[in-house]
Amino acid sequence: MKPQQGLLPGNAKCPFCGNKADGYTSTTGKEAPVTGDITVCLYCNEVGIYEVAEDKTVQVRKPTLDELKDIFSKHPDLAVQVMKVKGVTKIVMTEHQKKYN
Image 1: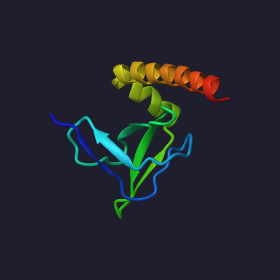
Image 2: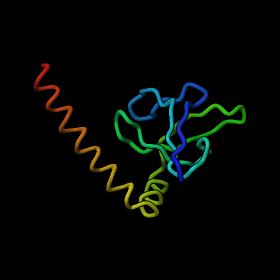
Image 3: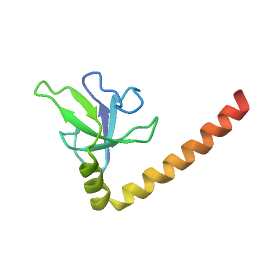
Image 4: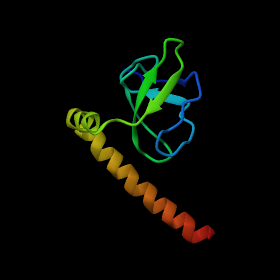
């Protein structure tokens, strides 16, 4: 199955860090996200939930605690990857701050 990529209609932003969330890569073969699909912010590495409106614009919202538990129980590999990426991001940002501050 080939990953699908594209730009999202609307002005989606990460609900955690506020950065643009205007693109997607689907690992399930879907052509575009649907309401309830999960996403991981490339800037802050937090897990979000897509909400697609009737006009096809897309927003990202914070998951509830129950949704997060459900996501990580169904996708334990995602939980591990998110934690690894968060760790690497923290190291990179720390080194960046040391170098440029």
